[in-house]
Length: 147
Image (cartoon, rainbow, N blue to C red; front, side):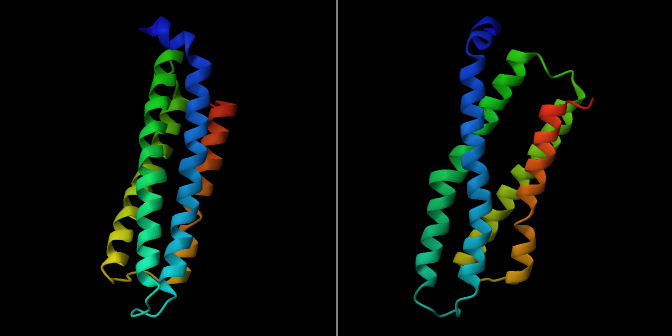
């Protein structure tokens, strides 16, 4: 099995990077959708369109990308034998944070769909920085392998 994964290493890496790009794009888009959605009056007819956009972004891009990122990433880690390396442990911790952020955003979409607007537009704009910060940390860990 490990020999097969080693032969497929470049394909695994390509798949991982492709789905990371899709996932990150979705994680940047969803909070912006929330801001636009929340800035509408609560009884505006456009609310239904925003709920539909948010659902489609989650179901078509974000959830499949999350699964693919984890699948390709774990296969890469196995094929590279990296589970003993500290940089991978740190990267996995940051990816867990991003995964929790993803789940939190999906839950917030459910609240918005039900008409519950718990956060301000300003707060959502600040929360939108989480994926960028996590991406920067992950890139540094993967490229520099500081430990």
